[in-house]
Length: 430
Image (tube, rainbow, N blue to C red):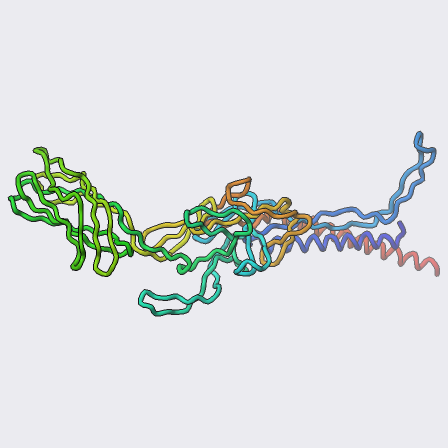
């Protein structure tokens, strides 16, 4: 290699170390960026020319092979497959993936935009299209749909639950996850079963009347009050009547009285079938279980009352589980599975192409993506209320920075020395 060629190798050394320092600076700057994946710089030797002085053929060759070293070339390696530490946050919409896979995003709310992937699960609510809502009194107002989005405003993708609570699994059914309560109207559910444990006073006089009021839900999901009226007709015998509100028509069977043995245990029918036609058009039809009735000396006493059914409800909050299922909590105390996250599986995660905003897109090196669910097929589990931190180790970056600085200074020294040698050579002609 000539003296002039030495400029090339030392200059390439300085350029390569500058590239390495740039990568180190970006890594350090993103040490607190959730889900950030560091970039490492590795170096490769460049050869400008190779020639051979071998003689003697293949049997007994002699001589040597010579190469002119042309310098060094930097190559970037993204460490996307290396997971960062998972740290709890307590946020209902903070999610971390513990294992292989990526969250799936779309740049368009309708799913027609670019599909992107990422590990930063610091999600929030983003606005969607305008929405007209009708109040119970018939009046309307305008608001906006709300969706689960990442920090860039990209829409997180998942599968909406089927009516039976199951989920689709095909990639074509992925959609943006809605958060606004107007997407999940929950109708009330009528009471079909009720159970009452009650004590009737054994010392009550014949002809005395006691009553107990209990609440049920009608076919419209509205709360109704039903009164059970007990009239003592003889020793250990009570006539029971069931009354609704004014205008209600009540039927029940059997119409036989309640009878008790000498120990206060119920000996008559333990269940009644009740039908009520409410004023206004709704109805109630349920089975009333009184098998735990007793007749002791204490006053009329309620021990326990349970019934199914619930009123209409409105979505109040959401939370995720380890399977990536988003559950809704409603104002009526009910819960419901709403969505399940889609988790992207990439054959070569380190081959993904980095984009601004801590997201990735596919490349020829990454391979084609497939979408599955958390915890299945080798994919990551979801850690709710947690975030994955950057996989940058500051101690390692500072060590590389010191080595890079020394290598750069050494290449600069070589460059300066070659320059001095050329100046000396130019002066020989004088």
